[in-house]
Length: 119
Image 1 (spheres, rainbow, N blue to C red):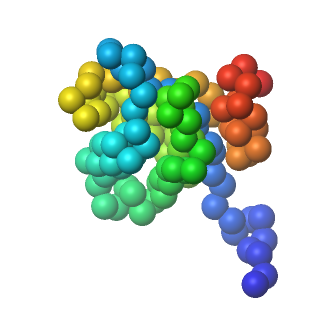
Image 2 (cartoon, rainbow, N blue to C red):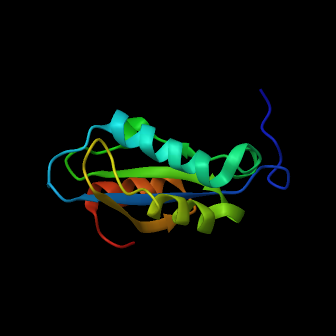
């Protein structure tokens, strides 16, 4: 299959987020992703979801570090940050979701997840 030229390809950003919870326990990925997806849908709506095209990488979520990666259209990165900040509870646990870094490549986002240092 032939790739689209760069001019037609949708430009995306990768947002690395951290979940800070009050109990300090691990948060399972399915609970976290269900709540984040629900909140993204509530914030964006159907039309906004089709434009922003948010995508959570479940295989890259670290339960120990409570960090994950969200891929979103570059025009809607601030909307995605706001939607993540509005998540208040995950599975009967008070949480705060903090954006750690926004990058243009998945490689750099993965590096940040592994090393947890600012790039």
